[in-house]
Length: 98
Image (cartoon, rainbow, N blue to C red; front, side):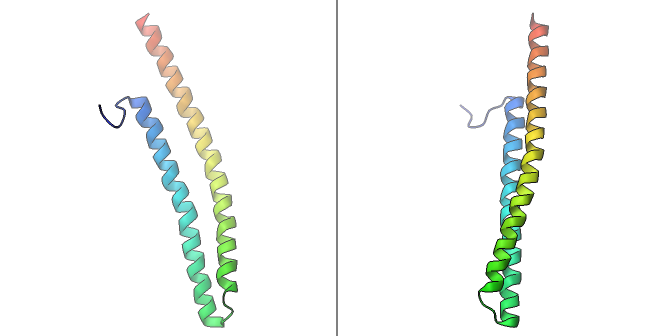
């Protein structure tokens, strides 16, 4: 028994899910890492530890939240379209078999 389904419609859902996981992971991790590194650099330069890092982390969290909200709406629409396509294909297949 294969671990992954061989059904093409299941593969489409799985690929969408993997894209979502990858995108959301990058959207969360990259801004936080970049902004915290900038905050630490500014602390080394100006000596206001830990305020630049804390501020950079909060700014990155807000930025990530906004980007995730936009992406979630986009992926929601993409999922609806994919779901509609799968239902339509199933109806066409059922009509051909009848």
